[in-house]
Length: 392
Ligand code: SDX
Image (tube, rainbow, N blue to C red; front, side):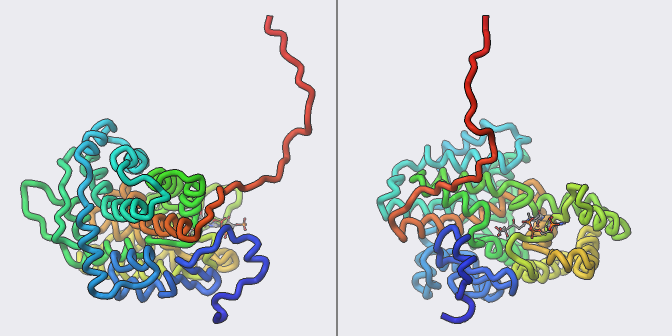
């Protein structure tokens, strides 16, 4: 094997599992999906082609690609009772709270294929999740603004259908803007999978107990919600809005360095990347394209660009190897497309679902799944004598 894949023994001792889906070299800033560089996939493939690659290990040929699209389109609708399930939530609920609830509840609607030892059930559930996540995500948004749910329009692309379900209404025709469609599809690709991140590890842990796939995905969505993980794109926009103008950046840079200040620069840093996140490079370019296409001059983007320039030249960030990550630019693109900040992590969950499913499938394909059971370093009391309290 070439140099990319020779691990030092120390690394292998910390590896939580074996996987052939995604390879990351944090020092070099390399991200491969089944051996293909993320920049190549983002440039030349679309999300469903990347989804096929993640799920089946190889890129589809033309016939396989067309058949896969047809298969996904067969499952974009959700059970009508799910619409009523939505109506149990308050309209002002955070969309991630709704997604956590709805995704776990899918096991109550699609229980005809929940035998995890049945390959046909696993394949059907995988397609159902891939196909229905855009529909459910758009329903979260429509429900929050009091508009009627839009049924999927299967003649559209995966990303185009999502934008349609988000922004179309029964009253007017809706044309998908091809630049926004491409940007949305690229955001899906850049968030599709990322090795053993917190939410993927959560899905694998849940799967190790034999939990059904909908429960595993719900666990992954819950884990993704945190601002240190998938919630960072929402937190990053709020931070840029809080900074407000370029002249206030030094104040926030100082706070980010202050160990006594819990403030962190959202969209910066990564547990694995100690070089520029290769996804952020593509996201940055896409950001330019979208803002140019929409002719948007946004102070948010000016602040983001200046913050990046300062941070990349600041000795503290250089010493701590802190670079912009995938979430730094995605929020600006989503905001430019017209997606509310509260929906940003929902979109991350939508895109990452295929990665979570790929890892879930891989565990079953590897066979003899053993339950994940980490141990601990106990630092509590030694054994003590129990003296009952006098309750008289
Ligand atoms: C995602 O794991 C994945 O793959 C995740 C993800 C995926 O696709 O699934 O890539 C998606 O979650 C990206 C990360 C999004 N989160 C954010 O942007 C939130 C802001 N970032 C930080 O919270 C932080 O960078 C983490 C949580 C992402 C990583 O934190 P770590 O593990 O502490 O990073 P580290 O050990 O490399 O930190 C080194 C030092 C530490 O200081 P010291 O204790 O060594 O003095 O850098 C500091 C950290 O405190 N640091 C930061 C910082 N991130 C790390 N200081 C200021 N601002 C930051 N953003």
